[in-house]
Image (tube, rainbow, N blue to C red; front, side, top):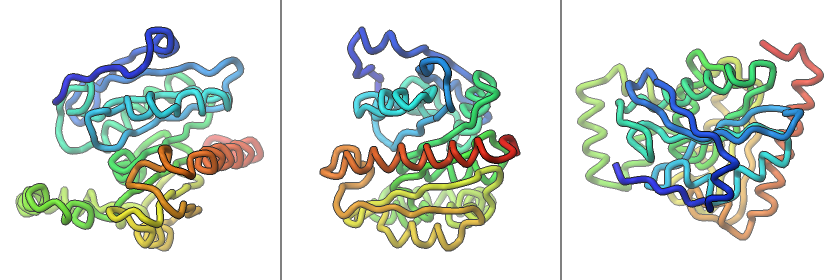
Length: 260
């Protein structure tokens, strides 16, 4: 619960429209949207990694302009308890669903993408196993289970195990490696990993791909820190991959029956 500061200049802030919505997590979710230049081709929701930057992670690393230039409406938001959003509970997947519904209501005739990184990606796998409006997803640096990620942090790991002891049904519900086999609506999924990520190794992506009930592409870079591919030597090829995947999905969408 750290006071959030917008990293953009006043001029760049004017390009974004603030919004607030209620989530079933019990929180008031706050975010920003940047409408695409007409005509918009699609909408993308960005789910941030854990950290005090919250949605600012995407703002200061150029994701808004990157996707905006491709003709996408761009939406960023703070998970409950982060940034400007109020605290609800640990069901962060409810926040993803709520923002997705907001995006779909704002742009009902367009395909909807979700790009989640680390925390933002792992909870996407849970959200996609329930009712949601997303058509395509890009999930980056995501762990197969919370246990496997937090075991490197002794205190949070013990708290997690205690939570699981008292809430076994919740523990089963949020096992990402299990939920990946129950995805609904999602038509195509891109998994992104770094070969030198000590927290979420490529082997996790391989397990996700094997277990998924939807088409999955696994793409990796040789060297980048966890959730920091955008800041690595591979930034250019990474951005090219994001856009290429989106273009392929839009082509698929345009040549299909569109809405499922």
